[in-house]
Amino acid sequence: MSPPYGSRLAGKVAVITGAGSGIGLESSVLFASEGAQVVCADINDKGAAATVEKITSLFGKGRAVSIRADVSKEEDVKKMIHLAVSEFGKINVLFNNAGIMHPADDNALTTTEDIWDLTMKINVKGVWWGCKYAIEEMRKTGGGSIINTASFVALRGAATPQLAYTASKGAVLAMTRELAVVHAKENIRFNALCPGPLRTPLLMEFLNTDEKKNRRLVHVPMGRFGEAIEQAKAALFLASDDSSYMTGTDFVVDGGLCSAY
Ligand code: NAD
Image 1: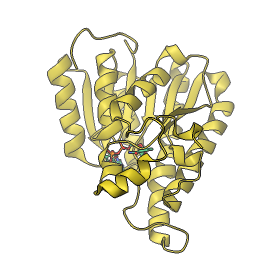
Image 2: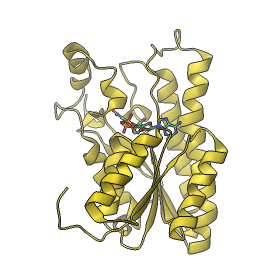
Image 3: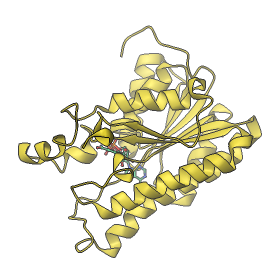
């Protein structure tokens, strides 16, 4: 990233989960480049700290802090939100982005209760707790923007089965819509980001052969995997006042996948 930087998040404080890799890493740097102060949270504390180092080297000190937070643990999520307030005075944006896709074969017949419960704990409960503690703080300052990362698999039946993951992302969409309606008059906006298949560690670990990659790409009209920065740019739009009349949406960034036959 190179200057000039923008000011679309000037004066705002953002908390981003999964900030150590992929979408969360790119979003942390992009949000900071647009003037935000950022809390970079990840279960991988080294990854989150490396993101802060990158932000500091690009934009100077005082722009970001890291915290080790496992979003499946309520206490961790509470501490993460409270760190934004103690360090930067408030929270304007929460990007509930951390998520897992279990590496095991995960269809209705092969998935296990352990895989199901772990996926729901991180992908669904983590989003709920983030929203719970952010809403409390956003009420005090007159509103905010919350972005929850869902997936295209919540909108279309994926041909490559990952049942627990798909169910978890469907829950994220449903939760986002209800929260948007319930909190609209408080000026707290909720939108779901629905990425298509991306070239990030989460997916690429599964796609270790050309054959596996091509099986996915056949469904993508653009014929390529998305990049994390393309999702970060969409998240920036949802985080900023540029999207001030948007709440409760499924914001699809998928190379045309959801429109394809
Ligand atoms: P990634 O693996 O690059 O990054 C995910 C980050 O989340 C990692 O840094 C990881 O340490 C962190 N994380 C995992 N479990 C955590 C926990 N319990 N608490 C806190 N942090 C945790 O993956 P990504 O592609 O950037 O994924 C980000 C989000 O995008 C996820 O919610 C994922 O489901 C969603 N998504 C990804 C794709 C894709 O193709 N990569 C497609 C659609 C949606």
